[in-house]
Amino acid sequence: MIKLPPISLYIHIPWCIQKCPYCDFNSHTLKGKVPHQEYVRHLLADLDADVPLSSGREISTIFIGGGTPSLLSAEAMQQLLQGVRARLPLAKHAEITMEANPGAIEADRFSHYQCAGVNRISIGVQSFNPRKLMQLGRIHGSDEAKQAALLATSLQLRSFNLDLMHGLPDQTPLEALDDLRQAIALNPPHISWYQLTIEPNTAFSSRPPVLPDDDALWEIFQQGHQVLSNAGYQQYEISAYAKSGYQCQHNLNYWRFGDYLGIGCGAHSKITFSDGQILRTVKTKHPRGFMQGKYKNQQYNVERTERPFEFFMNRFRLLETTPRVDFYNLTGLTESVIRSPLDQALAKGYLEETDEYWQITEKGKLFLNSLLDLFLL
Image 1 (tube, rainbow, N blue to C red):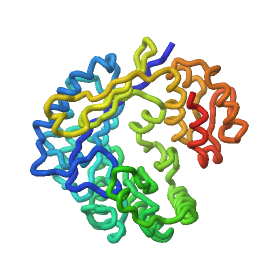
Image 2: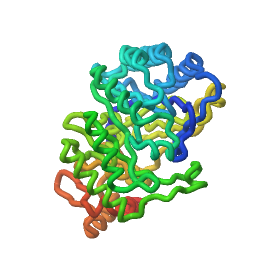
Image 3: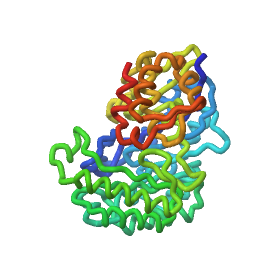
Image 4: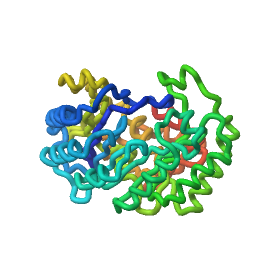
C-alpha cells in the first residue's frame, strides 16, 4: 500500500528586472509594472483548482520562487499568503521561504513580508566580486548583497540562505574561496553553493564564456568544501550546506520524494494518491497565457516503470542514508523490481547496503549519472 508523503506548496513569481545570461528558469524580463493584485488573484484561482489534489493534507512548507519574488509588493504578499491559509491547512511551524535578489531588497518591505508569514529568505548573491557580478548580468553590487544579509539577520528570521556560484568565467580557486569566506563572515545559517553550468536556451549557451577546466573545478570544490566544513557548515545535499538544524525543509521534501503542489507560471506538481497513482502537472509557462486563466498545461501519471529512476534521482542528491522501506512506501513497488540494478550498483562500488538502508558512496557521487542510469527500467 502506497504511503502519502508530506506535502509542500511551491509558488512561482515569473518576473525579473533583467534576465541573467546563465538562467534557464522560467523568468521573464519585466516590461512596465508588476501586476501585483491581478497575478495574486490568478495564483489563488490556480490554487482553488488544485486544492482537491492535496487530499486534506497539512502543508508542511511553502517556497516562493522565481523570477524575483521580492518584486511583489508587501500588500500582494499579504493577500497571497492569507489566501493560501484560507484554502489549505498549514502546519503550525511551517517553513515559508521567499527568494530575493539583493538589488530588490528594502528593509521596510521585508519587515512586511515577515508580518505576512515569510520566515526564511534565500538571497541570490552569486558572487561578491564586482567583475564576476557584471559577467553574470547581476543588477546588484557586493555592498548590496552584504546589506541584504545584515537585514536578514536583524529581522531575526527563522533562517536565511545565501546563494553562491562557483566555476564562474575565468574564476581562479582564490577568487572562489574569497566569495565563500565573505559569505561565511555574514554568518548565514545556510549556504547554497552551485557550480555554474551552461544550460541550453540561455545567453551563455549561444555565447559561451571560458569556464575553469576540470582540474580547477575540482580544486575549487575540494578547498571550498573544507572551508565550509571548518566554519561549521555540513553538506547535506550536492549543492547545499547548513549549520546544524538549518537544512531547507522544503528542498528536503523534494529530495525525499515528497509531494508538492505548484501554482503560478510554469510551476510543477507531484501528487501521490492512496490508490497508488502518482500524478505530475505543469502549469502554463508564459504570464500572458497564465493570466488569461489557462493555468494547467500538462498532466500525466508517473508509470510504475518510471518510479525507480524518479525515486533515486531525488534521493541520491542527499548525503543522508535512504531507508529501504521508503522505496516501497513511496513508489508502491517491491524491492524485487530493482534488485538487479541494485546488485550492479553494489558491484561497481556506487552504493553500500545494510538491512535498513542504502548509502551512496564517494564513487557513486562522482559517477552519479551512471548510477542513476541503472534504474532506467
